[in-house]
Length: 545
Ligand code: G6Q
Image (cartoon, rainbow, N blue to C red; front, side, top):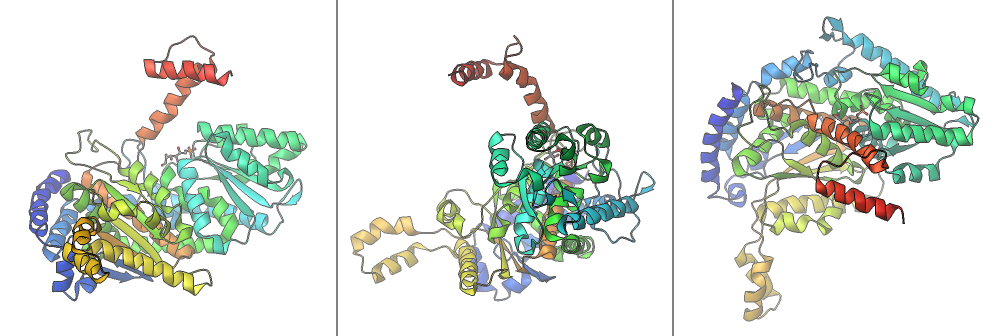
């Protein structure tokens, strides 16, 4: 089994780690003027720089050996061609088909899915155009606001992409409601007019508690404000469950489907992004898909040593399994990518936060890293302290555009300088001798230097990748997301796990259902443990005050 081969490679990799632990990146850069060109890939308006890592050519080759023995090629082709690789749910994994060339033939169970995809895309395009040009009318005429109601994979992708592509918005205003906390919906109610609002209920299953609660509350709100018979036109649905969308009262012509081979967190390419298409228009949405398709073809054709998602995955393995670093920070120096870390959190942690392999045995190594992050430069004034001087080493991804979408060049130069400065500082650090010299130059006394110097030392040698792209546009966003999707895929193959199920999420859905009657007080049943029982009792007391 591939994972045994991976385990054997880990022994070799650990030897490389021990060897490299005796040197620093600072020394490696000083000793090799070509280090950047050796460890970077320029491809499609994007530079992927992985030179600031604890790597040399020998360690990199050893990492590539992991990729070669893990069975990535066969699994990759199985995914792209529609084989059932999500074995625990008995499903194909074909988000890549959603952005494949329209003349491709991709079959699931002998059925060509490309016609289905084209049919739904045409229906989405017609509807999005009609909403955008005002031909689709609701009670008060043209739609002024679109509210996407969905959660998890039915929210994070479109919400992240809508924010990222704000410069291309030329349709109605878009809002996202996900949380069952009434605060989420209540804040949106404050800024929309019932007469001109379209609610899009985005739910693959159309049974998710939070989404159905929010959708029902939105419908009640409209029914109070409008003529009951007018409310239907204010709803569209994105779902695989036609029976449930009909039962909710959403007409079939405003229901846009997808299929069980599109996982929730991989659904941003599907009908789930109707709100994005309405915001930026079908043409730009097509460019978004084009960008992802280019990443697909890079992933399928480039040699592992020049394959960005494969290298991203291997670096993750290197730090998680060989160096024992537990977390990974995603730091976009691109404010409109503010939701990208949250999006990747779901993509990576829901996909690879698994403890058993495909055959049910425990994975013999650590899996999914803890992903987190915030846009720069804000993060610099918050948590970067720990990244620079804390006791944990946190590999980082810096993302930054060469061109800004806003016409304030002084801002962009400052932003870029900050981004480059951070990765440089993390790599170089500052030695005690450098700190002492600096303090002496600033006129500090010998005694003060002795006291202050240790606090000002930066260990350095802290790893980071930089993704420098020409400009954040629909195509580039598509490329970036798809690169991370394939990174996650490769890691899943190496660990031998199923990256496409989410039993942990299912558990949460079931547990809340059981507790509702206890919260409502409609049962005499007891909570399963004294903590829950105690909290429920306290809740009853406090809520009745
Ligand atoms: C994603 C997960 C999960 C899912 C939500 C919403 O991969 O399965 O985040 O997207 O639970 O599910 P529905 O779309 O069915 O409402």
